[in-house]
Structures are given as C-alpha cells and as structure tokens.
Length: 191
Image (cartoon, rainbow, N blue to C red):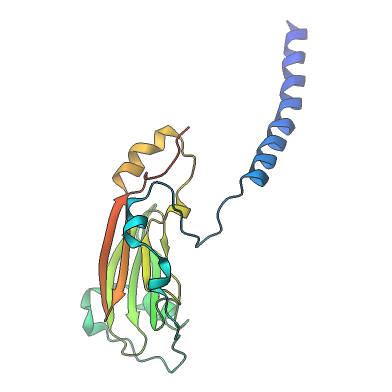
C-alpha cells in the first residue's frame, strides 16, 4: 500500500512538468491571436462587416478637449467622476471620441462614449461581460469581442456564452449604429 502511494506521487511529480511542457509547445505551434486582431472563424457578423479597412479613420484629433456636456445624457451624471477621469486621457476611439469604461458589478463593464470636439455624450450604458474592442483609428466598436472569449472553453461555460451577445457597432455622425449581433459562443471550440 505504501509502495503504491509512492509510485503515484512519483508519477504525479513527473507528469506535471511534462504536461506543462506539452502545453507550452502547443502554444508555440498554434499561437494565440494578438489583442485587437479580429477572428474570422464561424462568425456571421464578421462576414457581414466585411473588410475592416472600410472602418478606418485617418485623422486623429489632437486639439483641445471640449467640456463634457452631461446635459446631453443626464443619466451619465451618476458616473461623472469616472467619465471625467477617463475623458482627460483624450481620444481612444474613432478619431475624436473617448470611451470611458468602468465596472458595473461582478463580470460587468460599462462604457460611455463622448465626442471630444463637442463634449456631447453620444452613448452611455453599453454593458459587456467580456470587455470591448475599440481603437482611435477605427469606427468599429465591439462588445464582448471574440479575442476576450476563452477558447477552447469548458463545456460548463457554454450556456453562459450562449446568453451573452457579441455586438458590433459603427459610429456615424455622433450615433452608434448596431451593425450585427451574435452569441459569444460563435466560433468557439469546447472541450
């Protein structure tokens, strides 16, 4: 009985570094995509969106920040301190917008989008469970982006992912237009 326990302990000690080595090698063979890289596997929305270059912004505003007009979206007043703090960092979306992000509970992020040139808040209360993707040089805004979704995902998480929506927006003339929506389990491998 003692001999069996010792054999099991030795096998476990040998197996752990071996398993780590295999996972390390597999990651090198199949590298994970960089943050911000759009995935193209099994996504209806990415087909609908098409060439991401059509969302490109070439001019990034570097002028003075307008004062935030909280009257343009009064419900944003509740998060005035956080929105103002993030706003002071300047342009981070679509050439002349600022996206302020803040927590809204466990596994919840909220976003407020403000036009830096006018100070008008154009969107407040967008929520996500898996973060957002946006850049200063694109008009594309994605909630719960695929690169933030674990892949492969444990089968116990699949029901949660089926209820969570990935949403693709484009900003046009101070309006955030929903382009497409799909379940966050689209294109995800399960184990």
